[in-house]
Length: 372
Ligand SMILES: *Cc1c(COP(=O)(O)O)cnc(C)c1O
Image 1 (spheres, helix red, strand yellow):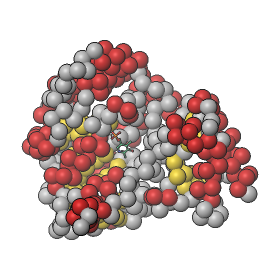
Image 2 (tube, protein in one colour; image 1 turned 180 degrees about the vertical axis):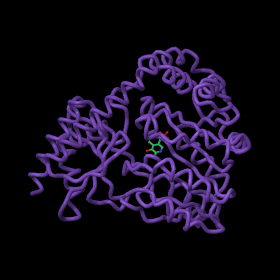
Image 3 (cartoon, protein in one colour; image 1 turned 90 degrees about the horizontal axis):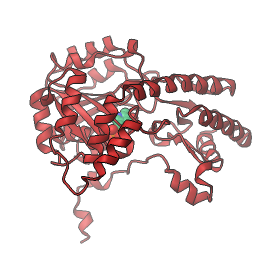
């Protein structure tokens, strides 16, 4: 008997997560020059990394032979001060994916269920499946979360509801008052995970004061990340905010050194670099206008987005989405096809620098001509 056949069926059935194509891969595939390729596929920060964070990470390299501070003391102190929570409410993760997984491992198992929206972040169904839990996908409304329907979908087996706000890949946002009403109605024995990976890109007027809700709802977990506006996707730092008891459980099952010292140093410095985050925000706002007005000029429909990306629709034959994606690759432009989200005619493009957005829009125009 093959050993792998002894693995649970739900593990063997997992379809691996498909990340954005790395630049190095396209360079290898097409023999392009690295400088000719632009990657607008993974919602990374087009400004790169904050200079302060880069300097701090270089300093931290000299201690690379030592294990990191497993408690993440300094970063937690800084986050605690910035966000107005106690350090006992913070769980650091190897990216926010790590803390999402901790919550899933605590509450999900075969027989338990997790709820997420159609078109929501692809990691949620994967997390449920990896622990043999049932995934309940609730139909979206206008590509966004239908919170009322999600509330109705809760069964006695439901342990977690995932809400991405804003959502990736659709960029949709739930209004704060609707989220609050959801929290007030949902049973206290269902954990609500509010994934705020793109929070820094929201105008102040659109931000939910979700951290304040932690005082009233012990079943709320908020997740944030240093991967996007802070420009640290590669070093993998994210965190969860939760009630002390829940944070304690999560901290007990995480790997003792889940966040490395380079990441800790980079995140701490990035948090202090308020100017860089502000610049990231304004660059994204300007770039979003450039991108959406360019799409409109090409007659392309898009889903209005609150993130640092926008998903747009290629009309006609259902294979046109993939055709345009491949044509863009030939031109050295990497975007994200959304076939694995059941949106085969949508592509997601990350907002880049002005010249990158321009190059993308030009390449898209060519691609549309070629597919006819
Ligand atoms: C990018 C993203 C994250 C962040 O993942 P990390 O593991 O922190 O890099 C989390 N949630 C959503 C919805 C995202 O798009």
